[in-house]
Length: 311
Image: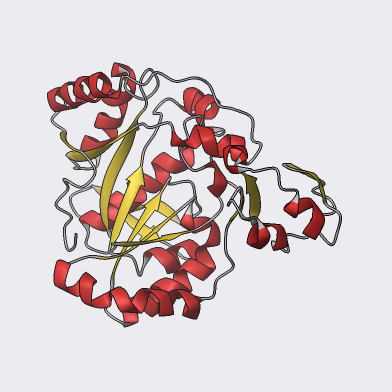
């Protein structure tokens, strides 16, 4: 599959591996370990924004990226490239034969793609018109433009649920084949502490997408859970999410092993370091699999899944 990365994310997970995706704007990063102290960046800056090697006046900088293009060692890097729908399509079209021979396609990821829902929806429509399978990775924090509504009682006295959705995010999701929904922390207060905001909307959106998938009126829903030792692998967290999955007749889950690649990116972007996290991932994965198996949930690692309708 080919990945299209979107910048911008509403969450601030303490373990985030892609902090360069938090902001929707272009960002300049500095990799000090590659710098040869040649002063080229200082000398070529027409705005005098580069005060010294690795030190920039952000108010002066126009992100013209001359310093990036002239840096001989690659110590300066820009995160984020302005694109149009057609420029992305042109880049992806040479991959179509591989998609079709392998059952693959394109995955929108980030960041959180729904933060650029209008653009993503336009791109999705273009790709679908050319027969490409589409998936999206999401944290679930978005506005669907609707909710599950309780309908009138039926003849047997049971109340049905109807779904009324509209707006940019739904315009996007209506062209998506597979939603990879990243669950994180079940407890709302803990989610607020570890991810920067509560999870009520996330749970609501999960239920909405599960209902649509069950009724074959929306994309296939596949839940995932990052395993962060000491944070997301607790019995309470695993059992909480297992309960939500079973409530929505879902019995499979991908476990995403934690890695610490995000730590160096924080340094490059001059972002405050996150907490030091445990790294005994093999033990955490094994424990999580055992706990979830007792709850009737089948676990996969990334790449092991058998996606319905595509790979």
